[in-house]
Structure formats: structure tokens, C-alpha cells
Image (cartoon, rainbow, N blue to C red; front, side):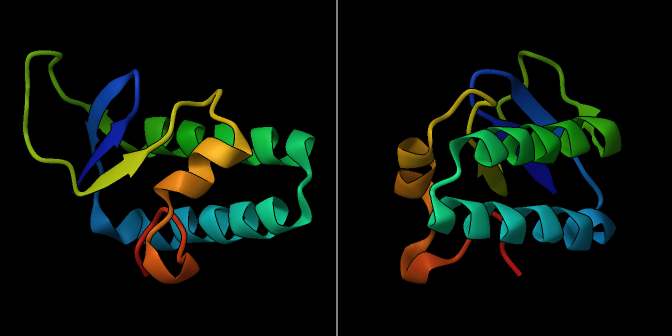
Length: 94
């Protein structure tokens, strides 16, 4: 799958890594519901770091359609809420 991190670019990531991303995504949703800004920033950065660790960057001039779009690491809770899928699902599909 292709993951875009806003403001950074795209990476390819094997589907087998979705469970790990989903765990972080679920934690992010819980933290957002609690309104804990500090924990939110820590968990969002962990999610993005995990994509970087497990993924392979695509060339900067590559413009392939993204399967997932993640916010920038400095995004606010409000910005991330606006990106959430309908029905309150997280950033990562199950």
C-alpha cells in the first residue's frame, strides 16, 4: 500500500503492517476523546515514525494515488478530527 504523510511524501508499506498501525490509530482515537494534547502528539509521532521505520520512501517526483493519508507530525487534534473517516473511524482502515 502507499501511505502519504502530509508535508513529507509517500512511502510503500506492506499490508502485513496494518495491525501495528491500527493499534497506534486506536490509541490515538482514545487519546483524542480524552483531549490529552501531550499524549496525542506523542502517539501521532509514534504512528508516523512507525510508517517511516516499516516503509520505503517513494521518489519525490512519484505521484501515485495514496491508499492512506496521514497528517503531518505537528497536526493538532482538531486537524486530525477533520481527517477522520465517516462514523468516527480512525485514520487507518481495519
